[in-house]
Image 1 (cartoon, rainbow, N blue to C red):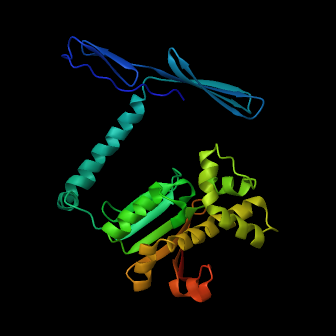
Image 2 (image 1 turned 60 degrees about the vertical axis):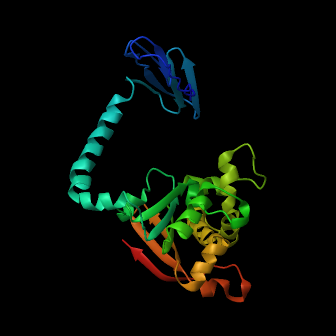
Length: 298
């Protein structure tokens, strides 16, 4: 995809000067809108090609696989943002204004009970699935909802953990996995040697232990079934990784912080929830997950 050019603003008055905002030129108050055209071509072979042209800006996508061709032309995405605007105004009218006191209180601070770690997948928004309202859950989303071990070094996930646990003092950390996870499928498809040039491979290797235990326990299953097994196993490995953070284990040991796993199957719309049994998991110094309070919602 073509990169956006940086924003530059002139210091002179708007009516007499020309400036550039993300590739659009503005002169005498008029904006020359860029246009985006999406060509989708379906041909005989599989594969995807993305290419951007410089004049006019365009995104060309060729999908080989079906004997069909279609051309979709869009202006500047105004239709999408018109819909977004309507959703925002509906939120303001029916949520914000009707709960004005609550939102004014949130403007002064937050005290969520939950820290949620979920996948970045667009199909598994925790607020939609579990009904979290503003102020109820501090969230971070990444590919395959993974938690790296403490010794792995800084990342946006453990930065969020540090803030949620030490500053917000959340009482629960909930890791939510899901069915048909592309990140887990990438992990299960990986060869032993990681391609360091791939950000995805370098990230999902965090779940290597989940892959190894899945291969050991479910080698007789199909690849799809192994992926499903690994989706849940990865959650448990991330729960154990949480205990590698000294300030998390300390709070769990004191009983002021609980660690939970969740699994959303969006094919059947079911949800499994379980809680890490800390004492059972660390017994005899073994790294194993013992759970309690397992629930199944359907």
